[in-house]
Length: 253
Ligand SMILES: NC(=O)c1ccc[n+]([C@@H]2O[C@H](COP(=O)([O-])OP(=O)(O)OC[C@H]3O[C@@H](n4cnc5c(N)ncnc54)[C@H](OP(=O)(O)O)[C@@H]3O)[C@@H](O)[C@H]2O)c1
Picture (cartoon, rainbow, N blue to C red):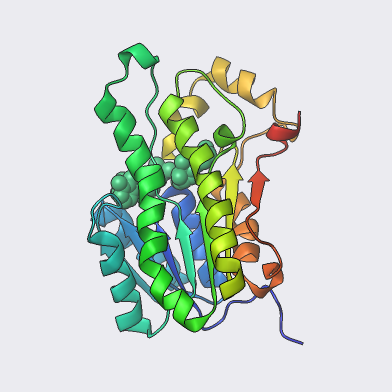
């Protein structure tokens, strides 16, 4: 019997695949059998991901670009189709944040977070759409956050964008499920990446956050990989429009 968690021969496109959770998912999906295309702005980071994926025994192409730009998503999809002749999986992971009281938040800073975190996933889903719809299959995994589920002060743009990712996921899941495409989201809790370095290095704040995590610790990027592989594989074919919280239990207390 075929292992329902294997994705051998498939191709995954991962935004924000240059470091952090995106790189871990790229390597994890490669270990599960997929070739990879990663998108981010920093070429040096992308090059490191390529090396890591190739060490896992699969091919990896880097697409340098900003998810906000009109042309990045179509170019990334074309790169995948030209090189591999297929595209099976989209991981919408690129994300950014801005912290600050609302009175001190410039509209441009607020807009940038919405554009990267929300408009970016719209652009990439729209770009893979024709291919996935024509084939009648595909897996989309959007990376939300526990901060789309519960609130934290001085993060209005981030919280709004991640709640938006969850709403986007449910709507597109309903639109595409009858066409054979699964759209789901993962809401990570606190993970050890560049994005959260400020929290992990602030002992008092870190202690306060960890006190609210039943498992008693933050996640390492590798802790996200199993859920990602599951949502990209046949094992999750009947999972539609869900937001899976991978947070050590932070959202259940
Ligand atoms: N770490 C956490 O605790 C945590 C918790 C919940 C949710 N998340 C979410 O998980 C996702 C990954 O976060 P992470 O912690 O891995 O962050 P990270 O270490 O900062 O990595 C973010 C990745 O996204 C890319 N990126 C950012 N803005 C981009 C843009 N405009 N265009 C293209 N690529 C862009 C970055 O590359 P370049 O800068 O080179 O473009 C980088 O590769 C994000 O959506 C984040 O909101 C993280």
